[in-house]
Image (tube, rainbow, N blue to C red; front, top):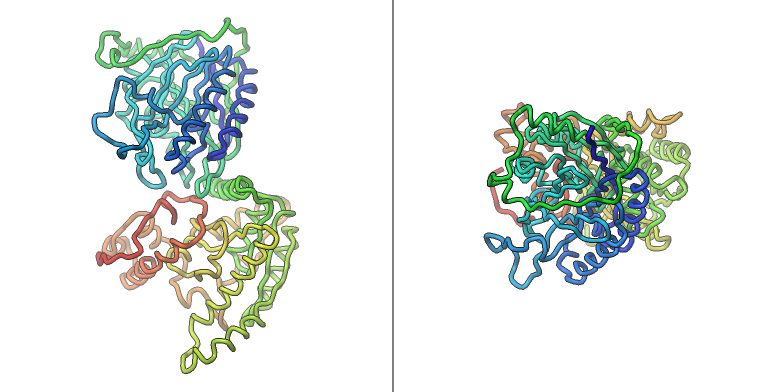
Amino acid sequence: MRTFRIAMVQMNPTVGDLDGNARRILRWLREARKAKPDLIAFPELAITGYPPEDLLLKPKFVEDNRRVLNEIVRAVRHVAAIVGYVGQGESAAHHPPAFPVVAPGRHEIYNAAAVLAEGRLVTTYAKRHLPNYGVFDESRYFIPGRRLPLVTINGTAVAVNICEDIWLPNGPTRRQAAAGAEVIVNINASPFHLGKSRSREQMLAIRARDNGVIVTYTNMVGGQDELVFDGHSVVVDHAGELVARAKGFEEDLLVVDLNVEAVARSRAGAGRTPRAESAVAMSVERLALRTGPSKKRARLIATVEPLADPLDEVYEALTVGVRDYVKKNGFRHVLIGLSGGIDSALTAAIAVDALGADNVLGVFMPSPYTSRESREDTIELVRRLAIRMKTLSITPTFKTYLRTLDGAFADTKVDTTEENLQARIRGNLLMALSNKFDHLVLTTGNKSEMSVGYATLYGDMAGGFAVIKDVPKTMVYELAHRRNRRGAHPVIPKRIIDRAPTAELRADQKDEDSLPPYPVLDPILKAYVEDDRSVEEMVDMGFDRKTVLRVVALVDHSEYKRRQAPIGIKITHRGLGKDRRMPITNGYQGT
């Protein structure tokens, strides 16, 4: 049986750390070579990390990325490898773009894959379909590729494409398969959101089956600012059946023997054998290479790692996002304002799982309105998580503020101003501790609150990283329950979960005094914020018109707050970050 062995490296690069990423690539190269593969595949833009954003506008960065590629080229011996990097010039040779897509005076660059073998750069492929939606801005930097190389490696016809290229039914995969490709090597930096891994595999199965080709999908893993890459690299055979799957949310090496003979038999039986004289086949550049002597190797059993429950995937994404943001930015410790509420409790649990209890500091800042239950629950949470805690009462400072403002506030009623003062005092204290001890402040606001502006600018929004910024309140409770089922004992006290949510900034305050109940609010927010539904559409979905209008107004009027909030981890298909870019000054009355 004719087989082709591929080693897929699911690695975690750091954006901009070219030399560090090169060391990681070389280390994985040595490890993968032990399996005697025909080909080793690395993720999209493995050398630069993804997304490199405006680093790509720096010619020196692009030049250094090419220098690093040359170092890797020299190390590739007795095997072929595919490495994602930033290409310049060679990827569009003889095929200039049909229209200008680069600003005048800017260097032309490509999101490219280098095919390497025997110490040389064999050929390159440049991404043809550049995503420019959601969190993606590739058209801002890259120009689309034109070439379609087809490389025969040790007798197997292999074609390369990159991420978005395979999502399109009429993308390069169709032409590559029609020209004779038996294996498609797709390299990726595909970020996570809830349900993404399953929908991605369904798409890959369709693409493989429709084109009668094996698809290998090598994905990046790790956190980069608000994005988390979940890994879950997969191999799908020509019939659309899952052959192998790598681990989720951690680096992994997936080595698979591909049954290429079955592809040839299936095509012959279906009358799909490519013809060399066809227009598609003639448009493809063909190369052949052999990587060293014939290898004697034992047949491998493909590994199929299980997919976790979607809620568990969200928790893993949050944990990885915190760990990588903290460590890649040079921090060792974090601090969290603990209130006795569910949001700060969940944030603390995630931080402990990401960084270890010794690296997490809880800060409890009681006010005149802090209840006995909040104090007791905070102490119990800290005990269960085994973290350190500082208690700093804000009551004296709050009274001083009120005395200072007494004349300015004469003849006015107490309102949210006095509530916000308390939150801002807490924000000041947290930032002071951050400055003094070099701890990163993790904020605790959830997506429901951030959407409607139920958060204080320069108060509870003050900090460096917003862990649950994209987690709706109802999901916060689900994640808390899920975390409590892990391990021998629950870490979040039951009363924290069961108590009605409250900011405790005035006597007997409850969130529902200011907001619709969260089971009502969250579906409306999903419809409006994530799905762009109109008021009439939401009313037709069964929501109360008055409630919808109220929620829409809160969302629209809070954009200025969100623009000043820390970044947070994206876990839904449309987060409150680069996914959703609404103007602050906005006179549109359509809502």
